[in-house]
Length: 412
Image (cartoon, rainbow, N blue to C red; front, side, top):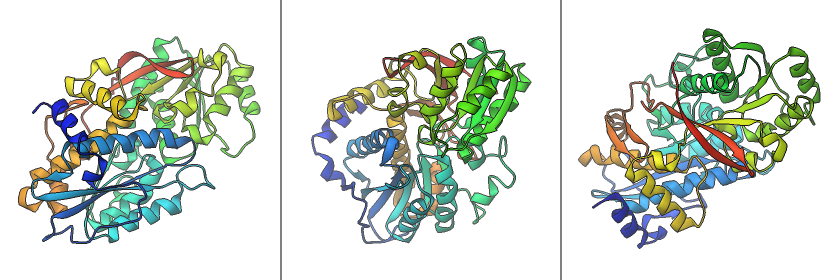
């Protein structure tokens, strides 16, 4: 059956057929190692604050993938439990909550896989917990290079995340050594001669900013500075003055919306109206684009791993149709990656055959993913756990929304 037909048929059974649990409070009984045919896939994503629209889209994508399978793989019934790694007080992912979620999954004998986190800094906390428990973890959105590879990594990365000595983490989105190269290409295409770089000091933002700085130097783009911001500051007017004094004609922010991304863009633009403003996938979401205002958005350029739906294979285009039909709105960019994360987890369980309830067999099957024809296009998972996909989208902002401009073929 074609994917769309299978999906449509599966949707008719409803969410409950797949054992979805948005409340995240229950863990099914049984063993994830052997003997049980009831398995649990957890997700851990920030479902509060500005992250909620993006994360809810990812959850919806995960649900669609599970519904397409009818909630089963062979003889195994798959239960999905969604966890929230954000807190109301933080307004974004919070380290203690991330740890709690990871330990919950690790202690549940039925757990076979964990989808998350959304933020790379959060995964830096959950990966060691799940690694020691021998549980497959697949992120739909982590791009920080140091989580999986030494290229562009901080000292001690990535080995410090894998205390068991074995790899258990992978991702379906291209890592930041790809995005950084795409960013530099984008900036040069837009006429940048000197770029002032800011970062939010998190694993993702700092790592990406450092790689942009490094690659820019290799490709003849001058970097005026690479400076961490105080994410608790009331405004960034003094930093905007630094941009002005530097003579930079472009700015890049390595960071996420929740770390004052909108405020930084507005303040830099107010004092530097001709400076072009660049952001990464961490701000490729409606809570960022909808708050910039008409003048700032004219100068804003964003790299985004999600491409124009027309550029995806037929199954990818069917995903966007199915999503809008079920949820009544277009998805945020990372929904398709949530869908694919669940699909590749289910495929790993399937490939493990009778050992689909054996955690190590499922991990091995995931790392053996080769030439998979997916909604994102054909890809493999390499020995680091990284996808071989490499295209990034170059987006602009119009009327408060991301608008796809072109594909960036990053040269790394």
